[in-house]
Image 1 (tube, rainbow, N blue to C red):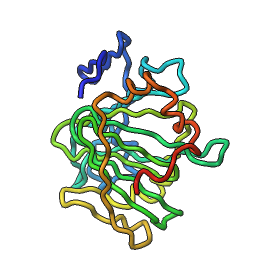
Image 2 (cartoon, rainbow, N blue to C red):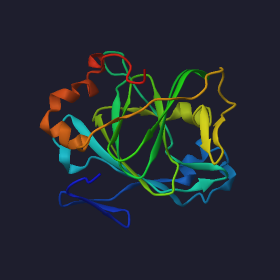
Image 3 (tube, helix red, strand yellow):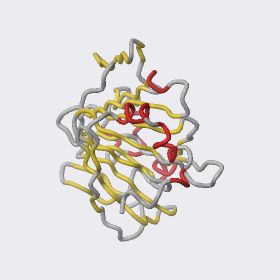
Image 4 (tube, rainbow, N blue to C red):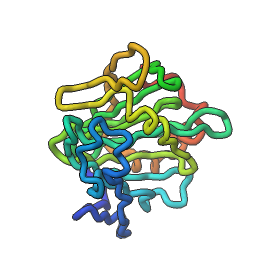
Length: 231
């Protein structure tokens, strides 16, 4: 899927004529959530995050891009660190919406009470596919390869993220490996991964937002999100 006005070369991004330097997540930062943390080059780049592209500057929403090369550490595919969203004034954590632009992403979403897993969902996203992260779910994105994964996200710009639960339990409740899903024994419960289909948009979500910002009001007012998009 083409994202107009955006060019990435050698991990440098130009968006609408503005050059953005990436925030680089290193393997050093991923060590607490990797299945085999002893097998990494700590200083190497694991993935690249481009925050607050100029498309939505001045808006209440933020548009980001993340580029995840494909790599394997031990038997685990490349992934993001993982985080939850903290609640706002309404006491409900803020949702988020992702879209795949290039490559393939495996989106892992989990709802937990401490180490007890209540739900674990995965969605396979290909270019144009859209994934909603509902309130109360933590999430990790995996690049199962072989191509680099480029994905975008829309989020309320005042959202705060909580990375600590993923550090505490050494990643998500399941790792995605060369042999498929492997249970993370630091969690409790008998929940198995279940697959949910993403929905598809022909246009980039940032363009859809610009056409009709009110249709995304639920990103900053999560009480407006009807039902659970994972059901």
